Amino acid sequence: METVRVERSEYSKIDQLTSIFELIRSGAIAIVSIISVLLIGALLIAAFSWNNTLLEPIKVPTSLEETGYSPEVVTKRVLDEIAYINVSSTKHNKTFSVRQPGDELMKLDSMPVAGSLNVKSIKSFIQDILGIKHETMTGEITVVKEGDKTIYGVKIRQMPEDKILVDVNAAMPIKELIKLIALNIVESKDPAVAATYLRIHKQDKRALKMVDRALQDSDTSDDAYALTTRAHIYMRQHKNKLAQEDLSAALKLDPKFASAMALQVQLYLNQKNFSQALEMAKKEAESHPSRWQTYINLADSYEGLGNKDLAQTNYLKAISLHPSAPVIYMKVADHLNSLGKITEADDVLHQGVTFFPNDSATFVMYADILIKQGKLEEANEMLVKAYELNDELAKIKTAGEKNSMLDKQALIEKSAELKQNHADLFSESIEDALDNDFEHTEHSAKPV
Image (tube, rainbow, N blue to C red):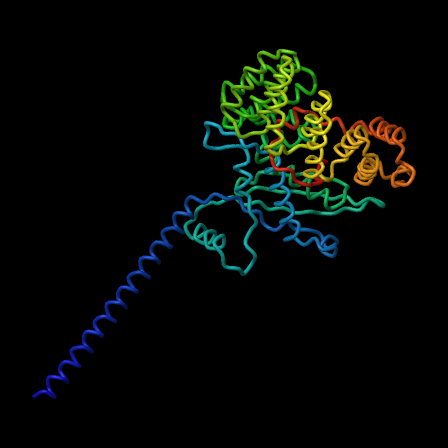
């Protein structure tokens, strides 16, 4: 009897284990089913809501492929250039609108590589099955020889509207052609971003056309950006009345629009309206206490009103926040120099050349401060560095001579000659610096 009970007990344990495994298996199947349903649901939702514009590989002539510029390479570089234009032109302003300039450009993406299986491929497949229309861009580069000149023809279309985004013929290196294609796409997709980029690169006439286009379309979410860009151009052209009209309109749309507030302060300063400048600068400080531009505006306002102590406090506060423009380090150092605070100016310019090791003008000004302190060898090194950094300066035969330049007067003359012959190194606008708050990035792209 005892043996039978033991066997039944063992069978009972086996049955229990079997039941447990069945429950686990059923649960696992249920979990997998739930996850599958969720994934399918997510993909369906994404298929209906996903509105990225995909750029198909741009067709290129054989001559370009042979030099390494395949359709995939050209397409990737065009998208990279568009991304750079977007980042360098979009400010970190908070607006009351949901959509901001640059959002459309962020939707641009390359088509998935043929034969690959990824999220983009699956979404496109589902959209095709369900008959959902999705935007794509298709393009081609052709080449024509005219004597020694190579002329590239470029056409980029957006489908399904069959809208021409790019239609140009140009004789230029392929690298410049890629930049031109990218800029043309940006102009078509987001004129407000294009306007800022063109303004930064001193292409004012073309920038104003983009501003007009942005203001004339039905989307008003980018109007404050466009108005501020135009005000900036008018300020550069000394058309203060027109600039004020645009700034007033921008601030009416968004009273806390950072770029407009900063430029309004600068416009008051340019007109010697220091009390109004300080009032606006204080409002700017309340709305944007973490922006270094705010403290430059406060400092300039206090400087205009003769309050040297508060000016210095705010200049140094701006420097502590690491400005993204070398001209600010030069401006603050010049202020300290005017007060006879040479050591403090030295500290500021040391930061400047550290953060901007490729800016010739900062090295020249640093050399001047070092000369005043009798640090002639260091000053000479700064001037030699300035020559080395600038292609035009490097052509001067005396550029690398270190042995004979340790005479104080000779160094002063060398610095003065550099400034006189290359005044453009020192011509960066304070308004440009205050309106451009993106991270400092080395990039040689310029509008063609």
